[in-house]
Amino acid sequence: MPSTFFGLEIGKSGLYTAHAGLNTTAHNIANIETKGFTRQVIEQKAGSALRANGRYGMIGTGVDVKSILQTRSDYYDEKYRNNNSIYGGYATKANYMSQIQSYLNEIQLQGFTTTFDRMYDTIQELEKDPANLTVRTQVTNVAQSFCEYFNSLYTNLQAVQKDCNFEIKNQIDRVNAIAAEIASLTKQINTVEIGGINANDLRDARNLMIDELSTIINVTVDEQADGPIGLKTYVVKVDGQTLVDTYEIHQLSVKPREYRKNQTDADGLYDVVWDNGQQFNPYAYTQSGSLKALFEVRDGNNQDNLKGTVTAYVGMRSVTLTNATVNEEAKLNIPENGQITIGTVMYEYESFEVTIDPETGEYTYEFFLKEPIRAYAEEELSSVGLSVDYKGVPYYMAQMNEFLRTFAKKFNEIHKSGVDLNGEAGQDVFTAKNKVSGQEYQFGVYGKEGAQGYDPFSFNSQTGDFAPDDLSGVYSSYYHITAENICINSAIMSDPSKFAAASEIVNGVGNYDKAKELLDLKTDPSMFRQGKPAAFLQTLVAEVGIDTKAAINFAQSQQNLVSAIDNQRLSIGGVDTEEEAMNLMRYRQAYNLSSKVISVMNEIYDKLINYTGV
Image (tube, rainbow, N blue to C red; front, side, top):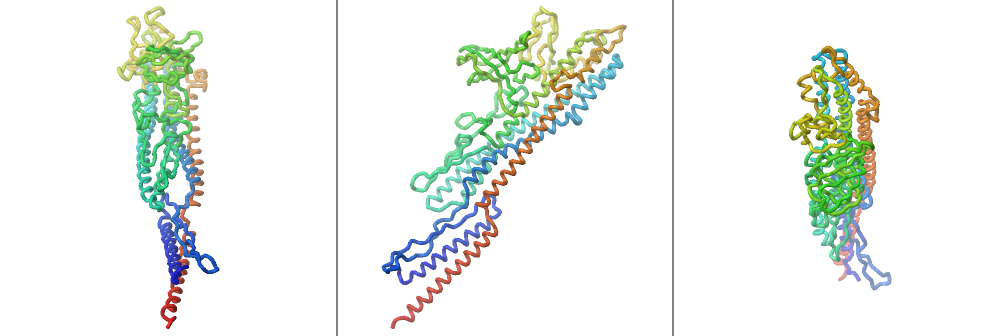
């Protein structure tokens, strides 16, 4: 049976509940522009009723505030983060692919097209007057400008690769910082909630960290109660690997590569590893986010790396790769020294040699290993470098190298079949410089069949192969020409009379048949599958344009989807001004009514105490 004055307690409970509702509403209104804030509501229930001795049964005791809750949807949180990761990837690709496109667009604008046409304009003038040294000088100078254009293009593309590499480190640092912040917030949340209070604002801060993390990398979150005392475990996983386990974090770190994966890669590109030494795979199909996009742009080679089969015995210091996927020196893009994976075991190689079957044209590769074979392998699938299913910087560099090697080889073959103004055999016009020695390569074989070192069907990756005394200088494969190092033969640059425009010299005056053959190369439709030489690069520009447009379109489409999901999430957890204004009126009215209850009870008790009795 309640006391006579129990009505005051009921009124007081209503007063306190309305006051809590007003404070919660005010908190919502104050944070209407706070990023990541989730609307809060009070959870109220009727007070525990008292059993009465009278026939009317139980007597109510007022109202209790059970807790202050967030109106948050775990379903929309997960949906938002999954799509936010996809958006982060497309947005990053759109940014860097636009940079690549801007550089390659010069091929069609004032870069390649202008330089290529100027070079052939001077060759056309040489055809008219093959003995004119001024015209010859123009030919060599413009040809050198042609090479310098590709040198510059290489520098620009490698700058994009280095920018991606630098951003990868920044992203990994940010992931670690977010992980540390999540662990710290989880500890604060558990400290507060062990007393039965919901740490709503701390949870908002933690969820905001997860949202930011989802832009960088795809994440999953699992929160579970841990025992009866109210503590909860909070586990954040990245592609199945644990990043945060409640208060413990597993950090990621970057590690510079000892070897390049592609021939034209910048040195010291980063790989990512866990703090326990386990490798992190950013290329997995289950990955998404800006971090994966950075790796794809930096390392993407459209899966055009060298693959084949290897049989190896324990203790061997070299292995032979057959059934190769690359059988053209123009398309060969593996580094001179690097890593070969045989089955699942990776070995470092110091150099490699290629033997070409004169009948089938198939390549056989022999890799000379740094350490002996550790595990037997029979016809094991093997690969060199990475196989990344995206057209990134390595892919476009490889395409440029293919163009330059093919064009330079055709140009040099014609030139070497002629003679210069002195009646001497023509030399290579297009060559390349060794980065270490600065020495210029000479391509093909200089000597007669049977001479020591003569082998038109093999070459070595190392740059220090010197021909015997009866041959001239260094000989090598066009594999060594890249957009980075292509140049004009210094002997021809210093003496334009060495340019071979004719097949023979008559009475000291050269004819122009070789100049005519060189001129015809410009419109040779058989050099590339795309057609004429210019068509090869124009196709490349169109290709990067399509890839860039696709990235931009996907980014925009995904951004719209993320915005739509976020709006759905906000419809549940966001603060609505009109709704909060209604709550203000509602709780004010409830407060006033509870105050009225207390006022009425006060009058009743006054009558009871002061006017009833004696």
